Image (cartoon, rainbow, N blue to C red; front, side, top):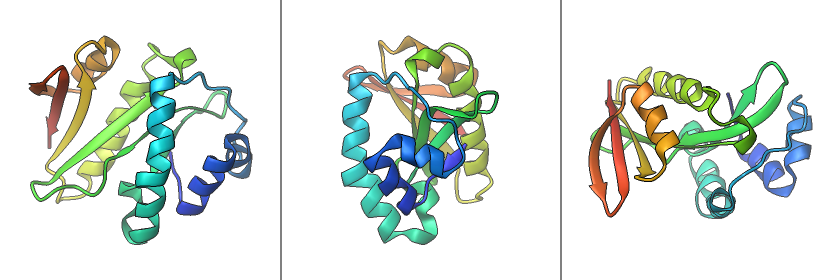
Length: 163
């Protein structure tokens, strides 16, 4: 997994292939659900770019992390936090996997890695993930990673993993 700097995010927004080549990766041909494309476009302008600029010392909590498949040296998805942990020590994670790479365990492995990284910080007490009730693959990932269902608000489920 590769967390992106502010400058790398700017390059990614401009052209994914340029970013991937600049960090030594083989350009990917990800198939991304249109719902996620809209979320990613919105994240650039309303979250990643302003927050990595505003909080450079905490940018790992505000950036996108590229999920790289080592065997092909290509990006197969993205993951990241929804910001610095809240006052309760909860850090929220979101993720997206290339449709061509789903159901192969990559999201499970990446979620475990990022959760482990977050728990290296003593102030992180729990990881939160939101997913829709009908997103059964995501729910299976959360179950495999030890998350427990903590809430359902109009079909948007909240899962939590305690330290």
